[in-house]
Every structure is written in C-alpha cells, then in structure tokens.
Image 1 (cartoon, rainbow, N blue to C red):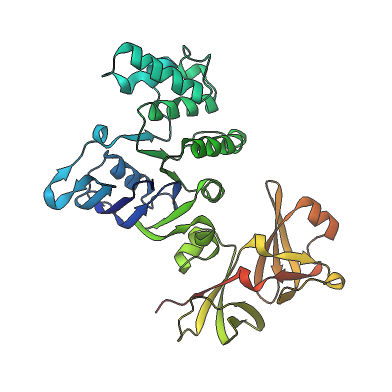
Image 2: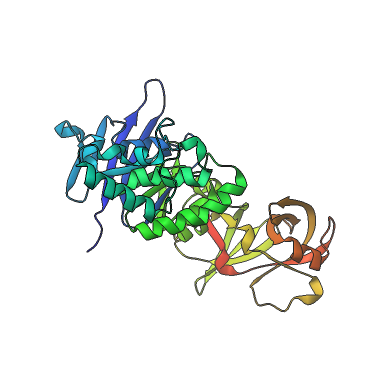
Length: 364
C-alpha cells in the first residue's frame, strides 16, 4: 500500500514579522528534508504541520485526514494528528526517567499495555538498561534515541524532526548522523527533517524542499535539487561553489557551448528555454578533477588550464581556489593534494564533464 501524501498550502503571518508560505508542498513516503538558511521558515512550517502553530490561510491534508482548512474554520489539534515530533533540544523532562519520559504520551492506556509498548520501543531503539536513568545521565546519542522513543511509542503516522543533530558537538553529530539515518530507514514511516546543513540534507533526504524568504522554491530528489538548482537563489542556498555569468553561444546535439569571459565551456542543454542568451554557469567543487598538464589522458569535454590561487583545509578535504580564466573551486583529499604537490602558483589542468556543468538562465 502506498503511504498517504501530505499536501499543504498555507500562509502563516507573524505580527510585525515575515509571512511564511507553504505553496503546494507535497510529502510522500521516505525522508523529506526542509532545507534553507536560518530564518527561511523551516521550523515554522514544521510546527504548522504538527499543529503547534495555526496558519491564517490555506489547507493541510494528510491522506484522507483534513488537518487544517481555514475556509471551514477547521483546525485539528496535535494530539489528533498522530504525529511524532522531536524538537531541537529533545525537550525531555529532566526530572523523569527514560521510561517515564517515553510513557508520557500513553496516559490513556492500561498500565500493562503501556509498560509493554514502552519496553518494546526502548528495546527497538537500543535503550535497554537505561530505563531508570534521568536525561542528565544520558549521552547525546542516548538522549536523541530517548526523544525518538517518546515520539515513536504512540505509533505516529508521520515523524517530524527539527534539527535533530544541532544540539550536539561536531564529532558526536558526525557519528550519530549515520546511526539516525539507519533508524529512520528502519522505521519506514514518512519523515520530515529540518536542517540547514548541506551534508545532513544529502545524508538523510530522499526528497529535499528548499526554502528561501519564507517560501518553498524547489522540491525534488536530493541529487536533482543539489546538482540542478532551478534559479540563482537555490544555487546560492545549496552552496554551489562556482557560479559565474556566461553567454550562450550555440546548442548542438544536446550540448550547449557557453562563454565565461574568454573561456568556452560545454554543458548539457537540458531545460534551457529557446530564447536563452545569458546564463549562470554552476559547477560543484566535487565535480572538478585536477591533473598535471602533462598527464591529461581523460575524456571530459572541458579541459581548463589554471593556476592555484589559494588552498584551505575543510575537515578531511582541501578547498582549492583556481584561476582558469574565471574563478573555479575544487575539493580534494589531502592525499590528492600531496600527490599533485599543490601549492599556491602551481599550474595544472581542471577537468569537468559536460553533465556536471549546470546552466541557469538569467531571470527576466
């Protein structure tokens, strides 16, 4: 059976503040990430879906259930929506044990049934032996799983996670990212996760909704959204490293030739309007391969002689800024940098496949 689809069209206005608009937001099964900068409306949309905020206009429907309809003055409260909600700080009651935190939402059940549900959920999430601990006696990962257990024990129809890793230090966040991803896959229920971290969005998201200035501006498969942004704003939000204005010269056999300054690039001509002339050329750093000029044996259509202008470490990778007739950024491992003997002023060739050069027409 196909999972129910959540369809949201609503507006939430804060007094003296921004208007948040969910325009034809469609959430299916799997994990959907709400992605955008701070203040873009991610948490507000999540809280409206949960019933913790009430929009002024619009509708929210989940399958056959009508959660909100401003025209009918209908608002279904959170407890009736059967949603599991995990806020940023987990919101565990500090004076209650893990068991009592998890069982808090089951007050209406008989004691034996409540105990059975809690025990099963704790075992499922690997919290056996921690039943009597207080939140302050748990690690960050254990607190996260306790919060998930409290959200999951009621067997929700939809799981909502608001920046679930934001409260953790970087090493813990990186370690728990994989663990949480595995848990969510195992749950197998529709999940909406809020983050402003690109790596988290790529790690978790089957689909990604990009939010900008309180509106959803692109939605689709994670790889499509991050590799083929629909406009300049999305390209900047998703942190495309190289964005340069260019002039479309010709289209032939599905390939576009573009001039960026005095440099010519070849790109796929997908989805370009017939009258396109000026475009933004977008290249992700991980799509750039660097080689010594005397070792070019690869077949990419774009072979760009360049000079290293700057290098900077970014965790396990090194960001290399190049001058190839226009600024170009590459991401390499430290080992690759050592093998190429990279340093400021070194001359080499940047290779970029045509399918990794994305073109965005200028807005009219």
